[in-house]
Length: 48
Length: 440
Image (cartoon, rainbow over all chains, first blue to last red; front, side, top):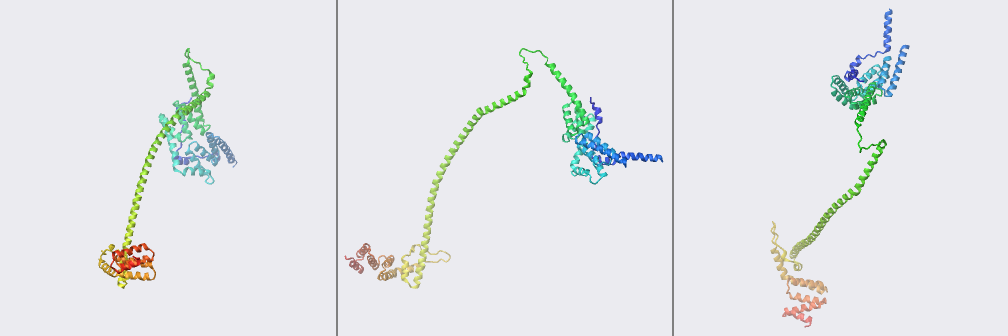
């Protein structure tokens, strides 16, 4: 059974072209490697 | 380093999965795989570019731009994303159109969330009409149709979405729902039909056997064929002959009119020919008159020339020659010259006429005699006649003429002239001579 209101909540607005610049600036392209490095850095600091 | 290498390999594996999904048109699955690939390695340019491409294909143009711009920032050289961006940005109106579509979708979403479903449907229908690959808009439109129980339109929209993104989970879910709804509806419709069809059979009711229905398609085709044949036959045997007769009749009337017109024209031609003949006749007359006129003009000029010749000989003292010219002179055509010089020719003519009249006959006779004595009778005759022209009753010239005629063996004429001299001038020496020559 499809509930209209429930389904509607899942629909998000599309990114508009005017917002591309802001999106790029705010974009987080951290990948797993960065996370691991960060973790290792933090471990090192803790060890110290 | 090893860790990084491992992460890159995992990223590439996800990229490969994403590529495979994209090739199979499972764009939703491709997006998930490619995003995973970037989580493991943000520098995976190929994955990022492909993600942009997939987003572009499902109508998420802005997301595609984000992917490609970041891709360029990571690696500027030898990057396919540069071409993608260049293609989109070289025509500004194209990008503007895409932006408008995205804005309209967002607006339609607001309408839908604010219970303005009709407006939302209208807006989304317009978007989806020209951007059939905009998956998100298609899904929302289908949901709105489903909410209105317009399953036919919802079905059509979802099928279009699934053409772009074959395994779009939302579209598949809605489609399954519609199928279920349709099945139950069909069943209800069928039950209703059956319920209504339960009535008592009458005597004249016909029960159509099932086998008949099986051949219905063929029967229809045969019936249509027969109908066409009958129609063609009717055209051939009824309509065409009638039409042909009508056309022939019209042609005959036209021909009659043309014949009448032709006769008329022929008559006109005959008339014109007659007129032409008349005109030609008139023209000949006019030409004749013109020629006569010309001849008259020439004749007049000749007389003036004669006058000049006579005057010239007069002043030279050659009166014989002057008289000779005078014998052929037509004094009647000469008129005074009536221009500013006002030359009067009459005195000149009188002078010549007087001289030629008094001395001319004798002088011309003498010239004739000189020719007669040398045996040139023709010329002698000519001068005698000229002498007689000036003075018709100059008897010596008459006698000499008669003698010359006799010498030329023109005896009858000679005799006649001798007789004339004898009768008209009996008391003259010439008459006696004439008698002598003639013999009586």
